[in-house]
Amino acid sequence: EVQLLESGGGLVQSGGSLRLSCAASGFTFRSYGMSWVRQAPGKGLEWVSVISDGGGAAYYAGSVKGRFTISRENSKNTLYLQMNSLGAEDTAVYYCARASGSYRTPLDHWGQGTLVTVSA
Amino acid sequence: EIVLTQSPGTLSLSPGERATLSCRASQSVSSNYLAWYQQKPGQAPRLLIHGASSRATGIPDRFSGSGSGTDFTLTISRLEPEDFAVYYCHQSATSPFTFGQGTNLEIK
Image 1 (tube, chains in turn purple, blue):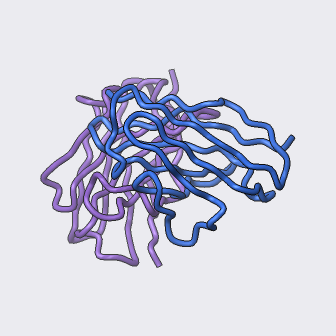
Image 2: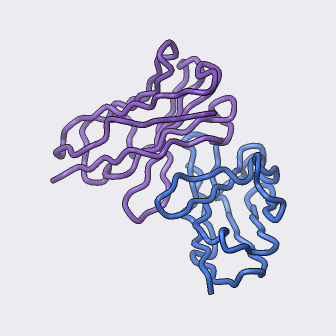
């Protein structure tokens, strides 16, 4: 069974940093693209970033480009999101999601999310 | 950036009725990279449709997707009580990938 478990969320001050992790199990992690998607309280889904299966390609939403870095450690079946210069607009539940194949394929499995709250 | 505009914002229908949800893209999107997701309160999104018209694993056949270019549609043929949720379209053809703002399908 595919499982994705996010961790690392919490309360952080504006301007601070946080690193999210997503532990994957139940599939061959190194063979799939992975994404981060976030959802601010009461709002819709916002795509944040994607990384290819081998980690050689990564892309970002304009709202986080230059502040967030996606990475993966295939030997540990773990996806990361390093978030710097956080602002109130980054407050959201952050989901990690597996692409069904390459990084451009649909997101067929999702974690339950981890909440990031940025205080002023 | 490709902007996806979903309509209507809210759709009020009764169980047994047919639901038609629209997703319009600001520029052409390859059908291969257009998907639909369902999200219920307090839950993660679930993949419904990929490649604009292919049902994901385990999705009932009352859900269908269609469209090409800039206009895509999700249809639910006969609404079941568990179908009332928020629906999002998503394109992964061109970075930055984007979601539509969602359609809230509510019980009338």
